[in-house]
Image (cartoon, rainbow, N blue to C red; front, side, top):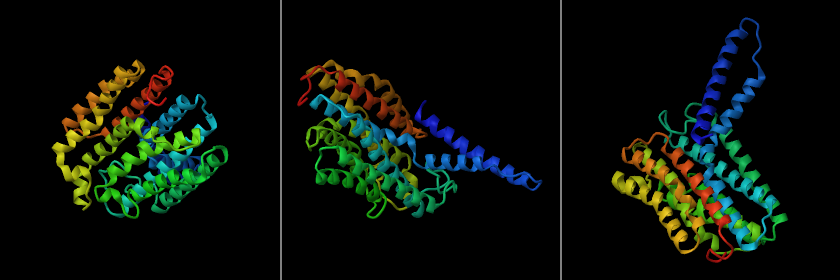
Length: 336
């Protein structure tokens, strides 16, 4: 099922349950009781919606890529460490999304027409978002501690990567607020590219290496395209709120050029890898039609659901990239 359809269904469930609860209250005046299961269902749907699950491709694909690189490098893969890495990165990513929701609302950036209306529509209260964010950061720390117990990676190296990612997820909108001073793109480019890939790779092999940084470049560019499409869509509302993003600094025309660069440069890299090393690296090229469709939508300035559609492309591109690495003949790729 497509990511945007899942989010829409969550919205529908939340709205239906809200209406059902209102109806139950009216019937309650006649003696009926309100059903607890509906309240639980509504709350769960609200929490899932607040996490923005459509964006999780930016976490899952780097973990899959780092693990695939480790497998090709070492010839073995620990499934437990793979799952643990995914849980750790997803927990930090989800918590970062909640921090973004909280600070965007507190600074008056989110409004009725925003993509994220978790707090604007009072789907959740601010304290709910804070508590859920703390829970996810705690879950991420526990998961990272478990990884240390089962991985041969040194503690200081694991802590360096993990807390570097955790700090970035918080400081994107919290504290310094890199998003509000046109540095959010840099944070996302590093965190959901080289850093996440290196984390998954190092946990598997037990040491740090520059190899994941190089292989992470195509995926990092694709992930940055998600954020840039979101910031371009929100350009006017962000400007009115007094914050500065890269999209605002360079304007609509250069934002279109940058989006296309982020969208199509990975394909150029894959073409070079496919022609020089192994044809399996041509697998990600199967997603080019989706990229051209996004380019046309961006050019027409029809930004509805474009971040979600870009995230879907990012997921498929990343999966084909991982498959290409796994299918490559031994020794055909550099350093693998």
